[in-house]
Image (cartoon, rainbow, N blue to C red; front, side, top):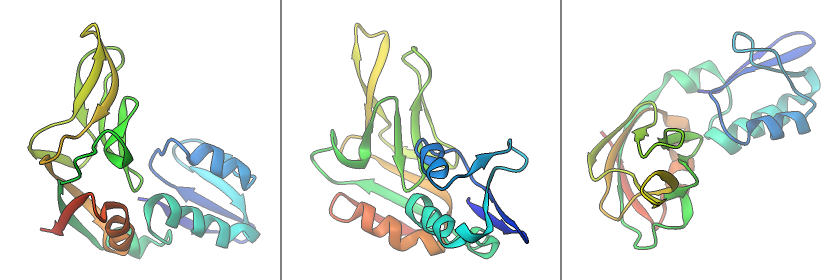
Length: 169
């Protein structure tokens, strides 16, 4: 999960990949310094970086938030699964977590890290049965999502309101 390290003149953000992180970090004049360091920001950007952590992952960037986790059991209930968080072009994301991804141009779909499908699986709209165009989850798909920070549960509740049921397990 996203963890901020506060230095005397800079802030380092170690965070998992998110498709919108690069653009958002650059708007804050952040610089990517490789996997070992992550993103680096000026020290006066602390509140902006914390806001970024809340926006993408629902956490404040503290190590304590990342350490206190739960497993969620999520069941899709919305009949309109071709919009909202359950669809994506080759990837499905929920609150900063990759739920599923289609592998390159093959018709192979794998779950994201910490995701286990219990009933149903990601499906694709494909052209000529060769290329995955869009992924989606059908109503009734059930999966677990491990290592969700408890601090992020309100973010998940808001994102899933009216389209899915969920509980901690």
